[in-house]
Length: 315
Image (cartoon, rainbow, N blue to C red; front, side, top):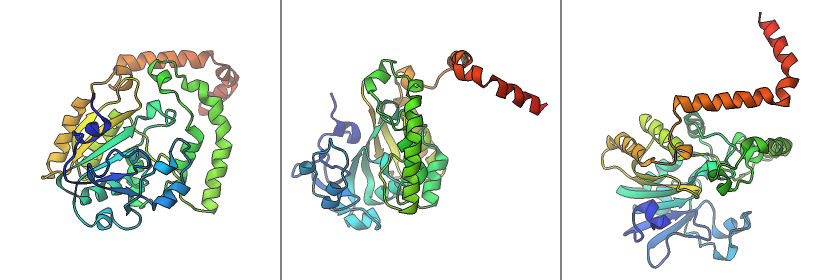
């Protein structure tokens, strides 16, 4: 069975000089086996002080070699690199387009870039909608340096605990979590109002992905000449897991980017429930079932007078 590093870079033993972004206490690359520098948004002591995840072992957090703050990454590192890996980092970056561009500027031509990306369907992002191109472009054009208030609110209100095994087995019921979401709305509003009045960096999953949606976004970025990588491979989320893997390569020729995305679609041979686009008959059947559920619900009966009034007004 392939290791996570092999799924991200195509090898367990990458050669040359590399970077690992956001390694925290579980680096994929280790010295002296690899010539690697650890990159993060702040010095080690700040990373430890700001760590809110109780699962992270503070005494195991690696020493940060490169602080990627206001200066471009290539300038921070000082020399070209052969490969970069980032596990569960891409979803946190405020400006996705700018982040990808800076990593590409750091890599030599032909250099590799590997990602492990959480599949939102099996994480606490399960109730959130997938990221759109418009959101990514807005963040880039406005030069976001921290998660937006909208993104923070979205996570605070819709980020609920999810058991991936329940999703894979078909036992996860998103509708049953509705009361929990409603209870989170007021605290979420209070949080973003506080951030508005006292701006500070609040970590959040800025972006929400599934493998098919991620490929769609890459294709759209390529069409805008905003994707600086070829897509080497995309390993879809395996049954029972909650992340997928992406291998990029810095192209030798710009024209190869879009073609690599088309090839990448062939990697999405996943379980129909969690990968392929539904057929029209699938969608019709799903819509009919949902309509029957709505008609049978208490809220549908309660709001019947309002719908009748709306039809009357429209005449």
